[in-house]
Image (cartoon, rainbow, N blue to C red; front, side, top):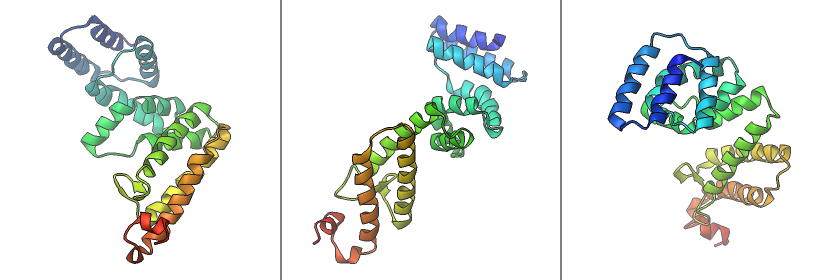
Length: 212
């Protein structure tokens, strides 16, 4: 493993007070800025941090790991895609700070499946991600279907229906029975779109469902 990466592990495992740890990390980042890192360096390091349950600090992620992983993702490196997905919390913090959502978790999953459509690990990650998302979209029924924190509009209902089709495909490949969730989503995504076209006639989506 790269010597500087070994130093990172030593700093994290030593249990230094936060102030000293941060100072040592800063010195390490300055040293690493002069080095040309490759994917093998990153891969060996991430495997070791996972084995030893070592935290990836945000400055280290953004300045050392992310540039190499981004380049590898652009070269369709499936392992790099999976590493970034597993570093989701670091990635989310980076996105919030920069407003750059190009490499979001779902985009990474879809990119990975374009490269390897039958990859079981990615399919399982995607199924879990979509299950949570789809449950969220209908968790305020009968008040309405959500898209993000707001109620879905007609175009977003169409997007949800397309996403549900992806979900059906993923569940089929994994031989998973998610029929109850699929049927609920299919019903409400389609009905909510119809409701939006007729809001002048109804006080609420609940009234629409009740045929008021």
